[in-house]
Amino acid sequence: MSNLKRKIEITLSVLSVLAVLAIAGPVITGGSFRIDRGVLEQAEKKYGKDARVRLIAWEDLIREDTSSSDREKLEKVNRFHNQMNFVDDMRHWGQEDYWATPIEFLASQGGDCEDFSIAKYFTLKAMGVDEEKLNLTYVKALQYNMHHMVMTYYSTPGAEPLVLDNLVESIKPGSQRTDLMPIFSFNGTGLWLAKQRGRGKLAGSSSRVKRWRDLLEKMSQNKL
Image (cartoon, rainbow, N blue to C red; front, side, top):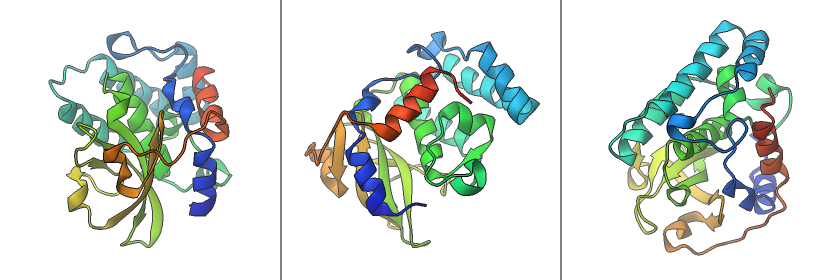
C-alpha cells in the first residue's frame, strides 16, 4: 500500500463527492438496481464469462434483498464481497493506489483493501443503508504492521462501530478488533481522526475530490 501520509493528504482533498451515489449510471437502489447489459458484455469480453456471473450475482444481491435489519444486510454484503481475491494494486492494475469501482472489483474478481471496502460501502448504500451509518476507515493492522482499510458501520452516531474487513470473515465490534489501530475515517460528509467519528467532530472536508471524483466518474460512465 502507498505511504499513509500521502493517503491522508489525498483524502483530505476528496471527501464530499461521496454524497453522490452512482454505482452504474443514474442513482438507482434496491429493486430498481440494474447493471447496464452493455457493461456485462464488456466485463465478459475483458475478464471472461465468470465476470458476468459475478456481476449478475451482485445485482441479485441488491435487487432481491429482503433483510429485516441492517445487521442482516451487513452480513450478506461482507460475505459476498469477501469471496473475491486480495491482489495488490501494482500487480492487479499496473499502478500504485488504484481505487477500483465495485464493477471493476467484482468483474476482475479481486483488488486490495480499499477496493473491498469501497464495494461494500456502495453496495450497502444501494441496499438502503443510511450513508451516515457508513464509513471507510484507515487503520493500522498491527499483526501485519501495515496500513489497511476497512468499512465501519455505526448504528447511531455515538455507537461502537462494527468492522467489515476482508482479512477477517466475521463482523465484530471495534472493541474486539484489538489487532487494528484506527487512524482516520471518512464518508460523503467529512473526515474524522481516530475515535472522533462517534462525537461527530470533523477533521476536514472538501469538494476538491480528485481520487473520488475519478472513481465516481468511472462509475457513472460504466467504465471497465
